[in-house]
Image (cartoon, rainbow, N blue to C red; front, side, top):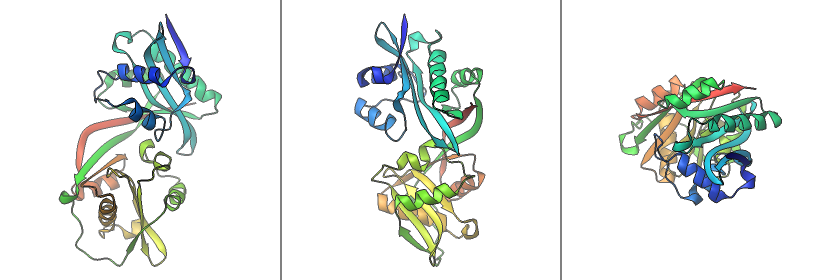
Length: 283
C-alpha cells in the first residue's frame, strides 16, 4: 500500500533515496551526493520541506515531488522543483496523486499559478502534465562558449564598467516588470550566493548595462540599454565578469529571447542540444 507524507515528516535520507531512485534512468544523468542534493534543491532552487511530498511503499521511498513558492512574473507561484517515481512504480497513479497534493498546497497558500520545467524530448512527461492541465508557454535554450572563441570587440567605447552589489542589480531587476527570466537565473536564485560577480556599465553617472555571473561562468543576468547596444558593450561585460570569475567557459539559459539569442550567436556561443519547456497551470 502506498502512503503519502509531507517531507517534514520523513528524513533527508528518505527524500534523497526517492530522488535517486526516481532519476536512476533519467534522460540527463543526475548523480550527486546527498549533501549536494540538499544544498541545491533546498537552497537556491527554492524548494521547502513543508511544500514537498513523498510516496512510500511499506516505508520504502518510491516517489517524490518538491515544491517551492516565490513571486514569479508578478504572481505568487508554486514551482514543481522535481517530480520523480521509481521505475517499477510508474503507471500506478503515484505521480498524479503527488501532483494533486502539490496543487492543493499551492491553493492553500494563495498561489495564482503552478509552474515547472520539463525536457523537450520527455514526451511522456509532457503528455502527463498536459493531461493535468499544464500548458507549454516558453522554450528554454542553452548556449555556451569558451572565452577564447568569443568575438570580443576591439572597438573602444567611453563607458566605465564597475563592480556593484547584489542589491543594486536586484533593484534594477525589479524595475523590469515585463521581462521574463527563467526561475534558475532570476535574482532569488542567487541572492544568497557569495561567489556571484556583479557589474554595471556607466555613461557618466547613468547605469546603462548590467551583468551577473556565477563562479562557474553561468550568466544569470545580462542587460544593455537598447540605446547602447551593438557597440561591443555586452560582450565586454561578459569578458569583465569572466575575468573576475577566472572562467574559461560561459553558459547561459534563455527563454524565447530572439534579441539575446542573436547576440549570443554573433559572439561565438554555441547552442546546446538540451532544450526545455516552461509549463504553467493557472489557479
